[in-house]
Amino acid sequence: MRFVDEFRDAELGQVLAGEILSVVEPGRHYKIMEVCGGHTHSIYKYGIDDLLPANVELVHGPGCPVCVIPMGRVDDGIAVAHEPGVIFTCFGDMLRIPGSDGTLLDAKAEGADVRMVYSPLDALRIARENPDRQVVFFAIGFETTAPSTALTLKRAKAEGLENFSCMCSHVTIVPPLRALMESPDMRLDGFIGPGHVATVVGARPFEFIPASYGKPVVVSGFEPLDVLQSIHMILTQLAEGRCEVENQYRRVVPYDGNLKALEVLAEVFELRPHFEWRGLGFISQSALELSAAYADFDAEQRFPVPGVRVADPKACQCGEVLKGVIKPWECKVFGTACTPERPIGTCMVSPEGACAAYYNYGRFARERELV
Amino acid sequence: MTSSGALVPQCHPEIGCITCGDEGVAMRVLKLDASRALAVCVDGAGSTSEVDLGLVAGVAPGDELLVHAGVALARLEPEAPA
Image 1 (cartoon, rainbow over the protein chains, first blue to last red):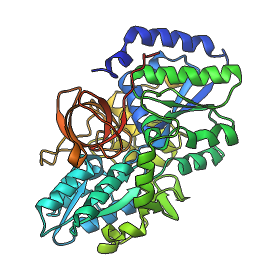
Image 2 (image 1 turned 45 degrees about the vertical axis):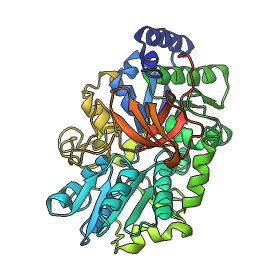
Image 3 (image 1 turned 30 degrees about the vertical axis):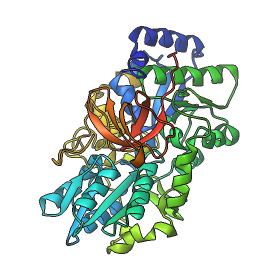
């Protein structure tokens, strides 16, 4: 398929690997964070890290929207799913995220009507087909996914659908990045910017990273050559003493984003004063809630929601993994008590989660990290 | 990618996390339903699905789109790799 195959060319990959080698300074250790879980997944799927010199280290960031959902929020979803007459819809990944007392999949087994959807528009269709039931969509995701929820709510409002509502847990990418930059244990040289979030918000919102923290950012696509080229661009900036936002993913990302999408987001959502991120704690203005114009579609107003904060399991070190402080295999329960089949932490649930990416692609070997 | 109704999580290591956060899929437009701002699109694996065109203007059959969670986010523009 166009836009895919040509970005998976192995020979070009080798050429890029050679160019990367030519720009790294021997003896210097480079730490580059891929912000987005989609990049983490690509890196292990295509073995991109094996093409890099040993002194270029990739650090996994907080950009998996499933991994950052705290347990209390899952409990809230399960409570709504158990409400009489409710059809609770969500993306597949959310079904297996552990709350304090089980998952949405467990709730389904206990009799709650929980259904997986690929799009909030599917949830809307379920609402049309079941006028005597209340259909709730558990909305998660960064700015990539939020427009889909926003368009769905606009359609629901236009159609006057009274049996559809949304439990909004959308998050935004810039506040957690800013929190990471302020973290004293972070020592990073550059960032692979999240390409699909940038499709919506553009590359411009990441300008604070070079401006305030002096680190290069390259907004990147997700095919193996995209990621390799982005790493090369970051290392070239470092070699030349430059520090700016560059856009490797120009075939998709306009520098200013999708203005229509931003307009729709501004109409349907507003910023929550604060939101809890798994492993990162409460971050101000880092998540979205429905605006006053769409308050009638807010599931949290329509149904009782416990809203109880639950501490993460003690054994789980998702927080450190999300901040890139430790590698997944350094977590005490990685691959033993915590596996994709029986995850303890969220990073093991979604394939975009760093732990699952390591586990699924057999990255138990630590040789590379020990080089 | 219409749900079959079966409760099988589709997050698979080979496919990636299709339902969640940041995964976009390249799809080609087969047929337009301009009055409802919808299109039938096909992905690289040959599966078709209905896509909302509310965020991308001037879409025509044959166009390649970046689709996420049932919504087209961008039209893909030709550009040579590296």
